[in-house]
Length: 78
Image: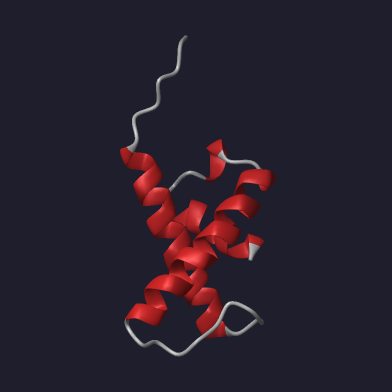
């Protein structure tokens, strides 16, 4: 579900700040988050095998994950 991480980074306008590694991580974790949320609402679909529904669930989960991460302040020293 690395494609889900990449699509989510495009939606959240973070594509320039994320590399391929973080796109993969966000896609994998986002697919788990999306699957948990979809199951709570009774949406039939799985990210275990490729399907359009599974891709949408994974992208929505990755967007939610990036939204939560955007709320956390970054303590960078310049």
